[in-house]
Length: 188
Image 1 (tube, helix red, strand yellow):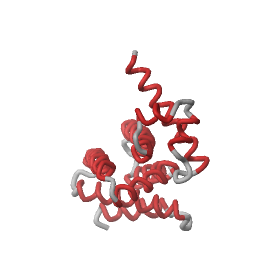
Image 2: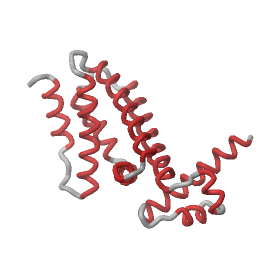
Image 3: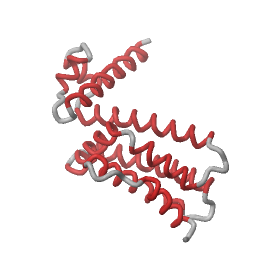
């Protein structure tokens, strides 16, 4: 029962933090604000999260895990005749639609690059996991490719396109990008 209570409190913290960060922005949200919104003391909050970066990473990871689960479920149910370009378009649109996750993702990347070795290690592990998932799916779709290189390219493309979207670049031509990647895969 105690484990369930801890899990519930952690989820309460994550939900309160997400709502505040969406409303106020990440930089303008303090741990004290989150403790107030979650109806708990700062000491209780610090028991679960001793840094804002750890809290943000868990929020981002929750969003990422949900998107990953949704994509894997979709891939398992996709029509076998679906083209690679249609699949790439769907994956890119799904990943890029998670704008809140994207903002938190880049906030954490900055923190990891500047001086946070723990967050950097968590990113290394998560990117490795994503690469393996993508490699596995690519092997099912395009058997004659360098799946490792393609997985790295797709992850880099998602990060780069998300950054462009967050910075407010012109509308991204997702279908054209998916078509281009498909042509490159087929050696056209």
